[in-house]
Image (cartoon, rainbow, N blue to C red; front, side, top):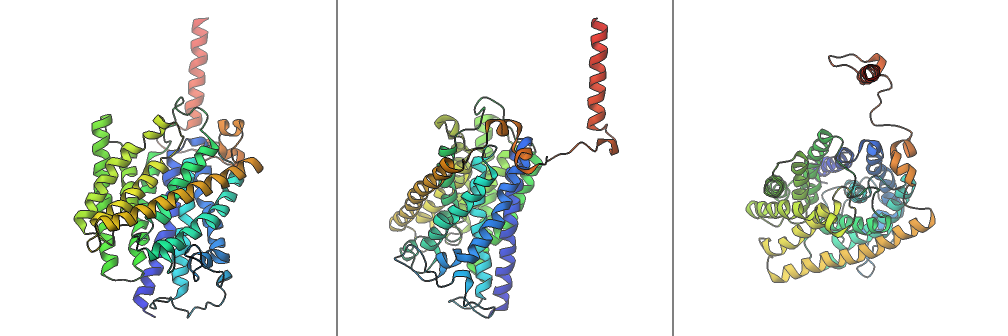
Length: 426
């Protein structure tokens, strides 16, 4: 066992775990206040569901042996036969460190989908959807891409840390799910602005920070490959921020905070499959293309009429495709038309499989227990309906202290002023 590599992978796993709460903040700040807690919980529940299922059978389906290049076998159900001294086949790190690291990929991937369904789905239905989706979609696709014997792995499709298995997978699943669930009440009519942009930036910062574990940790060793991936993660993300803001300034006349945060995520997504196979200049090119194209792509939902609430399709699907395809040309050792063809096949196969299966799963849930919240619940907000809480509680305003007046005081003053105005009018 290599102690340095083991420590590196365990620390990387902890960083990947932090990404899911970071995603919760990122998405939670982007929704309206009446459903902010529900948005947080849609990410947080994935930590519970996916972690348990990964131990029970997910690791075995994804990484135990191979069956026709499609799925693993069930030899390691419940992690049976593995001990703390068991090492990965390549050696160097305990298999439990690898299990933990891959488990947290299985956690965040379905959580990414939640942003497309914000404000309008039943929490119980969403929880069931996670369980079914990781079991039938994510675990097999992870086997295709990362497990020895998986058909995309054997085809030498480059996906170092999840362009196909995570981002294209989640992005196209989001598109299928929103087509089943439908649009939010008031889509394209009512303002649906983010209620807390500082929370969005906090979430983006946590994601950026955690992504070093996500990307560099996928080397599974503290080596030069990990260092190259970490460097490329930083410069691609930085360039994507600039690209997104440049597009916004030209197209809309402003550099928005939401745009900067979204641009960072687009860059992180695009470099994920490619970063270990390209140099820093190519990484910046990938980031620039992702920032510009994803910024344009998020507007398509209004033209095409599908309600991807928080731009999962425009950022994760489009960004994942950009990184997956560009590495075909830009890979320092294997780049060229042959590799590009392999990359296109990998991206296309995941898109078709995931879209069809996700649509069927979402439809089954919708026609059985119902996927969508009721009109009254959606209008009033999902926080009270499903969680019996509110994100910001001013009921304790009597104990308020501070330089500014409390919300209760402001409301009372306004009511008194209105009353005085009515007296004057009379």
